Image (cartoon, rainbow over all chains, first blue to last red; front, side, top):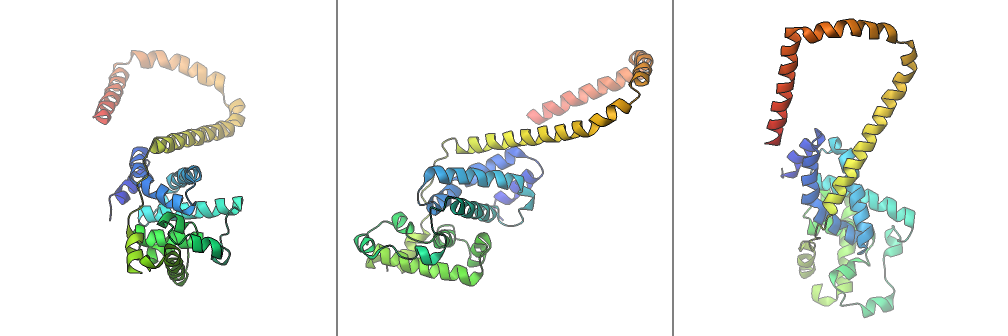
Length: 171
Length: 96
């Protein structure tokens, strides 16, 4: 158990200062996660992060698992709601699957963050949780509210697409 | 894929706080205030219809005769002093 869970229990007992410590501890990773999901839109990522923390504060008594995993689950559902509202980004994988061929060819040396922008949101989320944050597949599936098989499929397809986008050196 | 996996495992670049945490805590404090206000308004709205039915005149007269007696009672004065001292001690402890 990390340092966050005892703090979450204190916060659930009404200790707002303990929640303040949790915000400071996790803001960087959560905002980084949302930055990836929003393809680098800092203002939107910060708005979603703030809404995530507000919802977490309201529902802190419901936190039964890893605090950060629970926070990511809230952030993911907030991101999905926002994406549906804005309709700026296709959420289903098939629509976002491939960048135009010409664009892809000219972008074989994209850096990782730029390459991430070409993945479907669920692929971005799954790869970030499992690789950058070290979540187990089960933890990531729970955070994204996906069946384990679907999560693994997002990871495999996302990796394959990143490898293609980044060029053969990384493949 | 191994090189790609290593790249993916690298931690995300840190995002500087830049008053973000303070802004979140301000928003939380505001929301708590709003919620407390809403609760108080609800309680007030529930009590309002009862007020005209209360025997306010009788309560006032009873308090008028009772309070001078209570104020001059040594036992009540000691109890009041104990309460005040407890509150002061509790606040001093909380500040430490």
